[in-house]
Image (cartoon, rainbow over all chains, first blue to last red; front, side, top):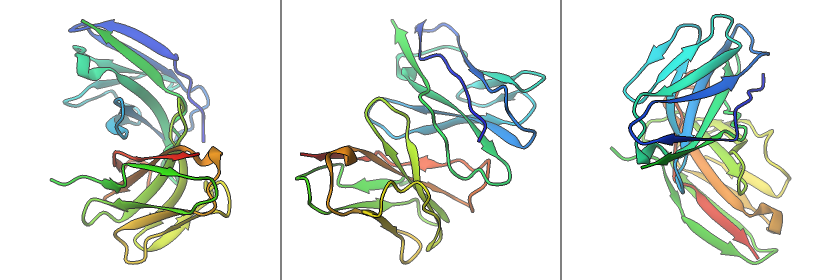
Length: 111
Length: 116
């Protein structure tokens, strides 16, 4: 699987937007970009995924660079409940059933 | 609706004991996954079932680890002769369809295993 690189930690103020970056310079044409997050003492939960185009859902937006070598997860208004570890994961469309989590970005949200 | 459940939530074992961890996936979900999460690390893949068939067990760290899903629903992860390095959170996830690159995986809360 192609690897991803994320900052270890980020901090945001409550009710402000948060942009979580992910680099994946070795991404292949068949890799989907997935984001999961893990709140303290819970299992991971799905956030969003995309292939080439930007994506929006009720939780977040995913902005994908034109060359697909990087992406950004956008939380439009951070809340205290958004404090979690965010994982950027590549999944190959041919065989990517397992999630390769890496270490993720620990997001701290302050009031 | 009911999500993925795991039991027990916490397990303390003495080194050398056998343990069994249970996962109840979302009803009707075809795929089931086990992951191991060490303290401060991201989850790591252990094994994958599609219905009752174990299609991938490449992540199991040793032959002391064994997983089964005999009727294609509930799954059990068994660890024999536990060692201190087995201490971790064991996460179960299920997915509605066969494993592929875009199906969402739904995770349980995990079982925290501590081996003394």
